[in-house]
Image (cartoon, rainbow, N blue to C red; front, top):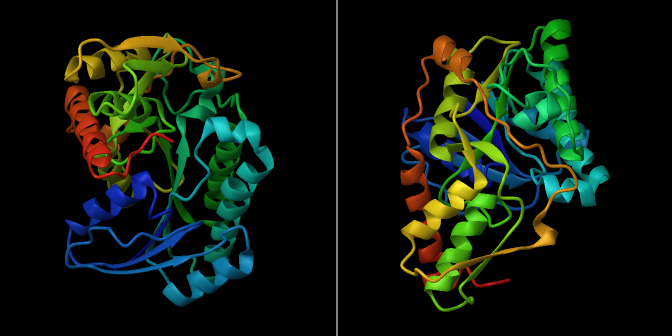
Length: 324
């Protein structure tokens, strides 16, 4: 089977290809917007990687026509909410124009391809407050990143209804795990703890809003969910990819500090880490994903946090996680 993954070198992409490689020998093709990685684990499967600007239709056509993929996992995106406020135009170029080009190219050149469009729970916005969010909840994005992903969510549905493309959508909540960059809350905390342990940062962790609650799922369970949606989900359907459990950001920090070898760590608020708009609580209902595909999460939160902290300890120890 020929499998094309956009955003292959990203956080979720690396874990996805490791999971897919466990299921047998496939022919993998990876596309990244900015970089390619030489450290991806594909087992016995073959892998071809290249850099491409997916916002250019001619480059997308070239890739689709050459690869003729059986499946496309579309992960490539500008995924930072903070950056989307700073560069909304660039965010739309990466997240909307690239996705539409991919759908159009597949429609024109390889319409039998199965496509998973990875979107986000951020699309629910303020309507997400209260109970666990179901896929039937109203979409009401509250930041430029969420608006861009909501656009792709709607476009995927349109291409299924209008053209019969085999498109499914993953609405992913916060995913965490080893290898995530420091721009995300859990990894940022773990990195600071590791720096403090190594004597490279004073024993103070700078934080943003600790009162918000989010749904955190290990990226290794996310990768498994993407396979289940692609191979067992219903075309035209959207699936929440989440743990179903709300966790306060303050609790994450407390758990990481408890795992630390240092017991003198202080917490300091940093205004630069606060978002212009921050919804108090978001958590999902994963019952559709479980019932229709058989997916179940494997990793517990404390296990994920321990793995993340150990990963950052290794990065700091080997000189690849120096304070920026």
